[in-house]
Image (cartoon, rainbow, N blue to C red; front, side, top):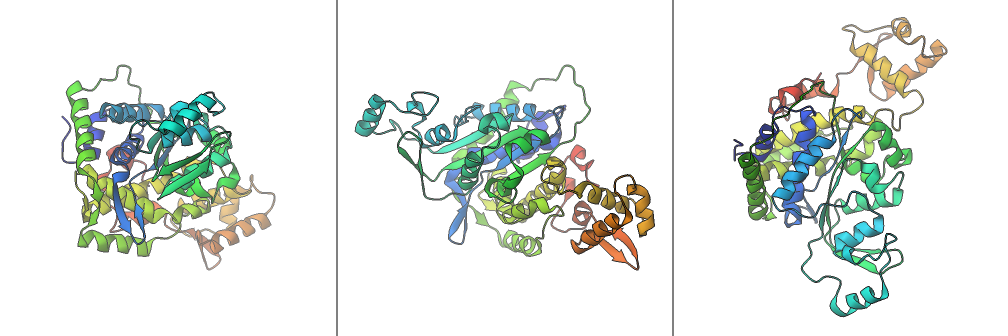
Amino acid sequence: MPSSQNFISSYLQYIGDTESPMVYHRWSCITILGAMVGRDLSFTHGHFNIKANIYCMLLGTAGARKSTPIKIAIRLLTKAGYSSVSADKTSKEKFLLDLSGAGDLIADEQGKISAEEMMEMNIFGAETKAHIPEILIAADEFNIFTGNGNLEFLALLGQLWDYEGIFKNKVKNSRSVEIDNPYVSILAGNTPTSFSLAFPAEAIGQGIFSRLILIHGEPTGKRITFPRPPAESDTLELAKQLQEIKAKCVGKIELSKGAEKLIDAIYQSMGNLPDVRFDSYVSRKFAHLVKLCIICAVSRLSKRIEEADVIYANTMLTHAESMMPKALGEFGKSKNSDISHKVIQVLESSFTPLSIKDIWKNVTNDLENLDRLKDILSNLVLADKIIADKGKFLARRSMLEEAHVNKFVDFSLLTSEERKHIS
């Protein structure tokens, strides 16, 4: 029976044994929690507010079982009464109309509104009942939802992630829409190959890319021929917990003094991720952390962030970030990035500094000459990825190795399966 003390823990217990990576289930749970809370709960940060909506994409090979966690999470969310789940496929215009509450007035797939419907809108208004502009994009295959390389749609989603106020946009072949404080969440799946089709390389460093949390999952290798269905009472209990969170977690999130000091300490120590492809993401890292802190608090049915919430949030985020380069695969890599990665792996596998000759033995089939290796080593040193010491080279400690001794991270809070991938 799920415990009522912590929704995330209860949810993972509810999932039980599964062929999908547990990290997929964890972040599916986090995302639906953020969606359920909605726009009526926020953390005041200077002149702005940070809300709990999450943009999460599960990335992995075709056999990594990404769809199952998404479907289980959405099924539970709808069981709890959430009804603002997006269509499987849409256009930018139709998406905005759905978010504004005028989506049902579409006359055809081009997004045109008939003269009769326009007259009715003008007389009676576009909405016949109170509409809350919240939506969860739930897409097993994100490319089907947006289409390949739809930069205009992707830019819109990026803009809506933290938008406050009245969002105005001209809908093609139709009227302008005005959306009061839109609230958008994303729980999607993709493979590295399909991801590169949805996000052209030029998307790195732009809008939505910095707002996405990419969750890499390794295939578990499990084969469960007859998975055990959950008890209906357990499903109803979790749905009830979601409803209670929605009802009680409204208004402003507060910080305990300890949590305030801890978040400040983490923020002051934040650095870049080892992979330059995530430089734009780092600019949003603080907001990602606060969003997770909010979710950890409401998971306990609280509107007050405590120190334990900050540690839990930072641990989950650190674990996800450490796997994000794997999630992207070859997307956006430079010409010699594979060789650079191989050099770093060679150095990380050695307990002593290695000479150029030692390294050359491992990459001789990948480079045309020794000068290219010298250039790569020089660039890695300048990028602070490796250390040069008396003509030899050694690797810097990996992000997760550093996290092991980080007082802001506690990997014991993760499942044993998730800890297996911490090196």
